[in-house]
Length: 258
Ligand SMILES: Nc1ncnc2c1ncn2[C@@H]1O[C@H](COP(=O)(O)OP(=O)(O)O)[C@@H](O)[C@H]1O
Ligand SMILES: [Mg+2]
Image: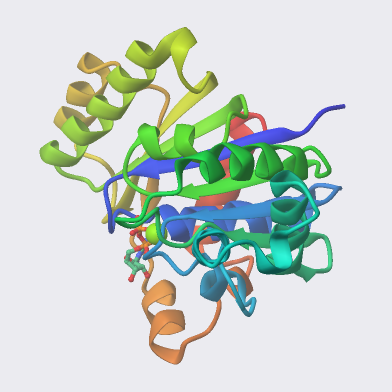
């Protein structure tokens, strides 16, 4: 069995990181195997949601490499760039029982070191192969996913808030995936997730989503437990299995076939 790759996309603030953490909780609780979490959003702090302490990011390592090159070699001399990145990225890996985390950090700044990005992507791709599940918490769009990995995405969850504008943003991502098609990141199954729903989704909203081809559609409840955890700085992954939000994510994961 190969690695199952799961990616979460959607507008900022819709609940991507929350969903990523809860899907990881589901995999840890109810499935076997090892999980690699990739924090692909520089402003997301997936590590906090997972209760893991982050020391460095891949972006920081790329900066370090750039400075090394500008300084004329130093510690990178004598070994291939690939080996150097592999070594440093392994150092940046945060390990915990059955769950490791790598944070991509900030994308390249003005001194873009583009050759490094290809090496980094190859290293991250290979790293992922060592796990049963790779879960990527992404920044807004698909282009970010392609920049970070060439992995085939088995499950893409597109998260939206319960507004028409949210649906339109989700539709935009769907279109992008279709357009990128064979040239970009390949996606096997796409699911749409409307998060922070109070009560049930209005019939009209569901109809609209269906018209846009946003199916299968899952609704996740607004759950005050999340706010409590946020306020107390507690990792979302520690939320009780009987919390409505976890129950809903669990059901979603099972229906999606995870
Ligand atoms: N189902 C939910 N119920 C209540 N609060 C939520 C829910 N999902 C997310 N939140 C809160 O909304 C905010 C944004 O969620 P987050 O997962 O960080 O979004 P994103 O990663 O898409 O930017 C956070 O403060 C989070 O705690
Ligand atoms: Mg986030």
